[in-house]
Length: 169
Image (tube, rainbow, N blue to C red; front, side, top):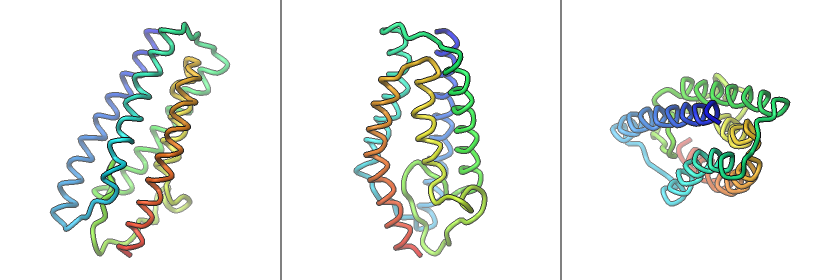
């Protein structure tokens, strides 16, 4: 349980780093005339991610979920790969990356890095991590609940993002 708590703590630190980058990029985008879309759904996304990071260790602790090596180690690998993909997206988008949907007028779509193959590679990372992080320590209820909530939220988010990008093109 201590190792799992440490893993969750590392993911929390990673999320805080994302927010620092996002805040800096939001200021830059606004200075360039960036327009934010989908403000109403954003707090729900934040709430879902906070719930994931709180519920997974709580489920492990309260329900006595064991670490099962045959499941835990592969899921840890998925978590690490998801973080790698997430930061590849952040690096590829540079100042354009944000946790919010912000479009700077006149900027073309990015078509390099993981965006050569996928329209929304960061969301692949989010989905993979949302399933794998709880399953590292068999917190399957959290994995299921987050996956269902995230599916609803991403369906809204992707529609908003695609519409915003279409308007800007």
